[in-house]
Every structure is written in C-alpha cells, then in structure tokens.
Image (tube, rainbow, N blue to C red; front, side, top):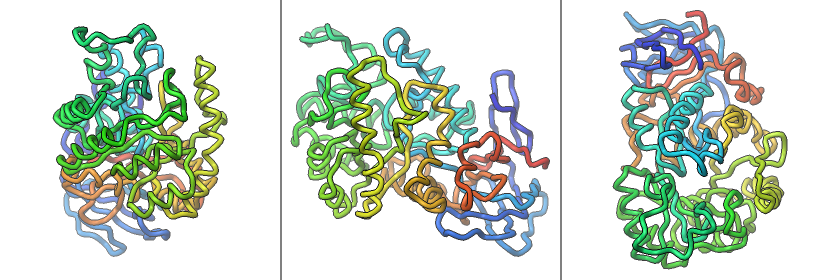
Length: 443
C-alpha cells in the first residue's frame, strides 16, 4: 500500500489513505504542462488549484496568497489518466472467486484494487461490467481512495452468451427457481426477449449506471459462446438502445466479429468494445455513424491472458492475432478510438495498467497515446450525458475550469512514453479532485 505524504488535508489511517477535503488553494510552479490537447508543452508554467478545480494555467507569476506551494522543479504535468474499459471488480479477483467466493470477497478485493488504480495515475475509469456502485459512492464521499468511476453496472447477456458463467447443469431453467447467485447480487445480468431486456435495462439504470453494457457477440473467457456467434436479435439490441436513449445515455457492447459489430451499429449501439475481427467496411460504417471503437492493446505477449480452458486459450490467440491489424486499420479509417485495458482476474497484471498504455506506441506517437488516455477518453465518458456524475468540471485536460486531476512526471512522456509504464517510479505527484494522494517532490 502506498504511503501518502501530507500535502493537503489528508488523514492516514491504519486501514490506508482516507482523503478528506482538498486544500482551499494549491499552487504548483515551475512545471511543463501537457494540457491533454496540444502536442507541445506549456513551458515553465504555474497551475493554481482552488478547491477541486483548476483556476489558472499561466506562464506569468500567479498571485496565490495563503496557497499550499509545490515546486515542480521542471517536471512534466499531465492530466490524470483515463481507462475507458476497466473492471473494478473483475480486475482484482482471481477467476476462482467467481466459482467459490461471494460478493463480499469480490467487493473487498475490488475496493482494495481501486486504491492501486489511483496510485498508478488512473484518476478516472469507465467501468464496463460489475456491481461497483457502492465502491464508487464511497470513493466519491472520500471514505476510500480510488478513481472516479463511471459505472455500467452488471453486463447483460443472453442465455448462453458471453457473461453466462452459470454451471453446465443450470439449464434447462425453471422460472420458479431464484436467480443464479451472481445475477441476484448484480455482478452480471441476464435477459432474454424484448420485455425482459427492457425490464433488466431499467433496473440497471435505476441502480445508477452511467451507460448500459451488453454482449452481442461471442467471448474468450466464457465457455458456451463460440466467437462467431451473434448474440441478441436486432429487436432485442434495439430495445437496449431505446431504454438507454430514454435515460439520455448510450449502449456499449462486447463484440469481436464483423457481422455482430455491423448489426450492433445499425441497431444504435454507440461503443464497440474490442472489435478485433472487424472489416474495414464496418469500421467505415462506425466512423460515419459516430460510433466509438473502444480498443485494448491485448497481445499474446508477456502480459497475455492465460486460461485453464483450452478452448478459451484458442479463442484468445484468434482474437489477439487481430490486434495489430485492427489498430492499424482504425487509424487509417479515422474511426474514434478509445484506450482501455480490460484486465481480468489477475491482481498482479492489474499493476501493469500503465504498461498497457505504453504499448500503444506500437501504433501511435507519444502525443497521440497521451491524448487518447486523457482528452479523447474524456469525450467518450461525456457520451453518458446527464448520467455522467462528474460534470462540475472538465475531465482529461489541464485548463481553467477542469477538475484538478493531475500527475507530475519525472521526465517528459511526450518524448518517452515508457515513463507511464513505471508510475511508482516516475509519477512524483498524483492529485485527484484537488486532493494529493502521492507527493514525493520534497515539498
């Protein structure tokens, strides 16, 4: 657990960091600012924080009487990073817990993992599956440390779909029987047919979801859905989209294959998660309909996922064989691309979150990588409209009126993007919502 240096009103307890109210004013001087938008740094700048918002970014002296002063000593200041495909609960729970554990164990591991996410510099995440509502509320209240969470709630599957992890003996079902445990506690959800889709979607929005997450194509980690299977009928997908629209938000869908992606786009889905096996024509359709491609740099490398089930491992290889082609094509076509990690069931791998971001240099310049993980990802979060709980300030940028979600990097990531792969060594200050959670600047 990372020790928190007292620079603002922060309480250190035996249970970990418990951030309280931010200092009324904080002034950081002598920093080179990457604002999240422009490809050149604002050199020798000062950044004034008032409360939880940025009040000024200036290259001239700033009057800040009574402010907490931090000398950036020439470090680079960047916006807090954003992971657009994160699982607060799934990332830090071994897959065996889904078989043998309960929701208390899942939640405790997720809450502990949330602090690690923040201390890697990820100050905001779009949680695309799992019951992270209580963790989000406690983080927002300052009771536990963690990132801002834009939750999707339980991801919704059809019978035999990607999130149907029930045991083989679970079918045929008896409507008189209670819901499977993980459905009952909201870790996942199942709906079949338009009426049930509408009801389940409304229940999830009632829970506090920012957007809906569904699966309309086959998955890797699940047993009963081959990759080529299209999941949900057009009418069912359109029902998800219509419910989301009534709440002024959108639907994100887990999809790998071309046919499933095309049908989802035509039905109104606005964020395709993964999409590693799509065609250029479908990407062009996405571009022309303002549909996001939420990609993850998943490769069968040292960070490759491993599965005990041989068929899942085979599917993993098939999917990751398409990663390079998909990133290259997406850049050529000009579809909107978001960055996420989709780390599952491996707390040790979750520590590699920043290394996943650095892998984007295989296809993008360091500026493009940082822009994607800050201001561009913030655009996707904003697609939730009024369901986005963080609207007091802007996310993903360093500018007047933006949230004070900031990182001081020992070095220039616009020249060396590998700096983000070692957050514990290179991130000397991490601030979220005006509160400093790490400060090794010596101030």
